[in-house]
Figure (cartoon, rainbow, N blue to C red):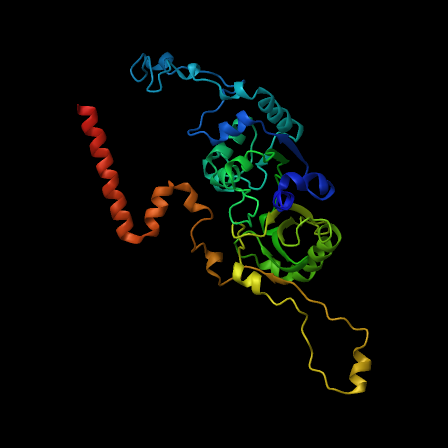
Length: 365
């Protein structure tokens, strides 16, 4: 049971098996101190070695600077360096970034910090320094879910969701060479049920005129890739995988494998559609006579996976929907309150005013 859960959509186990069909990547085993750092509150980053340290007091004559801070440290230079608890990992991340060309994208066992790109200077998952990696990982709800609730929604007869069982998970950090010229319109999400490719769709929720004409080329490419590379090699019979087909559209690259679970975004489908999709080949009307039977002998009907694109008139094509992962840019309390409508937000604002008022009273006394 643990073996199945660990492998289903776990990028750590996918890299060695599919090395020849995935972008270049490296795995870094994570130690307990580093895991505790990711779980800890706040974001404290190591000092960059090549960073030029400039003190505000050198230029403001003491007008805006102070001799001490609210944290109890005299200056930023006195803040503890968190990487001292895991120097080997810090050095591995630094050397791996250099080895992979100076630009990588990070991922933990199951999830990438896609929800935290808003905090990155590039507004993407591109990382050029170890601190870029730490900032994304510590700001991501998806990564936190991997660390604390990895088996939510799974059948759990053996108590795998118990905190002690989660501590046994061999966590790794996967750093993948960043594809600088990646064309988002040529990424596709594919759904496999009972080891049958049943449907696929584009990942980027924008309308592209040229994609419709490319379906006759893309669908067999993806289907042949699945039959040859994934159908009999992936441990689970139900999963979701992402591919990238760059120009000249002759080779398929495996970008990711995701668990068959509600936490995986079905994008242009709904999970109800995916679960209930009829995968039987179409049956032609047949007359009950010997001549038709003879003609149809040896002809095998083949199921054609649905290929869904964003149409010109779809709301997604005009950005009417909320930005992807927008809920993760706000505190959870605010998101929960907004879900209760205007009354929920009004109650939340009242509670917030009470908290501010109590803090002001405490400071005045």
